[in-house]
Image (cartoon, rainbow, N blue to C red; front, side, top):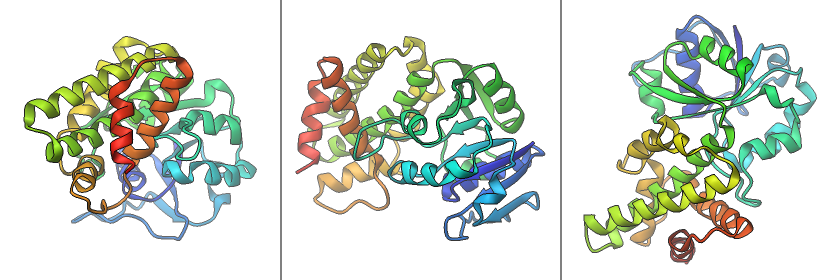
Length: 288
């Protein structure tokens, strides 16, 4: 299957490796022609790097991996090249300015049919994915998305669900919890307090998700607890290490999605009239 990947950062390139390894041809679109490099790995021969959006037009499926901050602008430009393909969103995060999730942004830009929208989210560091370390994800979407997803992601364990909004909220929520965990590790009185803050934050996120129509079981799936265990407990996580840096008064390294995630979750909580005091208080502390 010919797979078009929009975004050649670490995650997009990591996915290109695993999809190509599964026998699929990949067109990897890069804004500047560059792509992420992993130690000891050469890009497979069945991966084509391109700066031309036209090369993506006739791919069988699109994989959207553009950072949340640039997702809207990128999708607006790609709209002219869209050919009714299924689109699987692999971006975990919320739009910084609006607090909207990526499925909402996609619906306002490209406007694909509902059955053509999917979300992939799980406990994965890009480097390990690229090197073929065993990994798995929750794949949210209908029958069409599941069929395509199992073909192109055949080298990873897939946990299927129809709960798109729950899968997406988990991806946003784990960024916020990882940020809170890193911050609490430095500012808190001890590991007990860090665990307390992270647990309450996750409970508040579940409350928001359920009010949005998410399924409770999604939060214990790979996109939920699975991703939480990976990113909220490891300094390899940009959000966890970013929270530590902010607590020390330092500038975080790289993109820290947890900040916009916290903002988006608080906007959701306010709109849905969900009480989420810890998320609100942490947002106030981290915005100073």
